[in-house]
Amino acid sequence: MNLFKSILALSLIAFIPFGLMIWVRTHQTTGFAGIELIAYPLIFGGLGIAIVYVTKKYFLNEPLSDFNTTNGSLLTDIYWGIILTAIYFALFFIERRTLSHILQMNANQELLDLILEMRGDPFILFMFFGPVLWIGVALYEELIRVFMLTSMWKWSENQFWIIVVIVISASVMGLVHWHQGSYGIVTISIKGLVSGYYFLRKRRLLPLIIAHALYDGLQVAMFLLTYPEH
Image 1 (cartoon, rainbow, N blue to C red):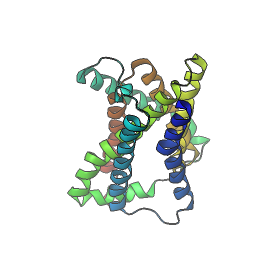
Image 2 (image 1 turned 120 degrees about the horizontal axis):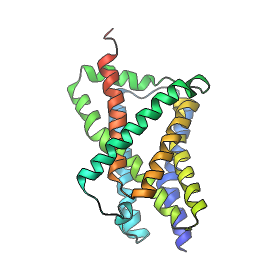
Image 3 (image 1 turned 60 degrees about the horizontal axis):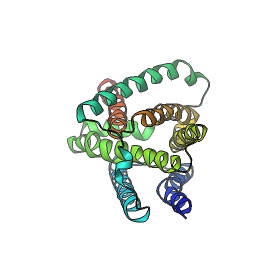
């Protein structure tokens, strides 16, 4: 019964929503407007976070402390968040020099349009680098990742299964970025392996959130600063 409830929870929280996201992206004929790229992550991510909380606490009757099972402090979490960010960027430059030549890379025109829109709208700029990036993107995605890891790890303590679960979670997170082409799927999956291994060793959620927000935010900030005005 516990296994059935766990599979049902995973389906409702991760597999079905992510499958719908991929379906929408593959059947979408037009892109999202800038304000939609601000609103949708907050609505979808905020709802997803609430569903994880309710499911974990009331349906599975599991403690939320599963996401942080080791002792830590804010300073050590920030430290590991910065270390993970550095690793992600190291992988980014390696992937650009290697995988970008053999995998399909789709330009993210929506993000480009949003960046250009942010230049003239301080409110959108604040919303993106504030609640959208930290809550709607980083917190939501890393919470789902950790939920997948901790849920499936409870099915077996076999070391091979533990590694398989890391691969599954990384692949799922990579497939969500289907619209970025095979390059996006593979590179995000690779970073997901790093995230999964880190959580296996440290069992701390906040460093993953920090690293995710810093990695995405620094890329957008550099693009915002360097992209030509005209």
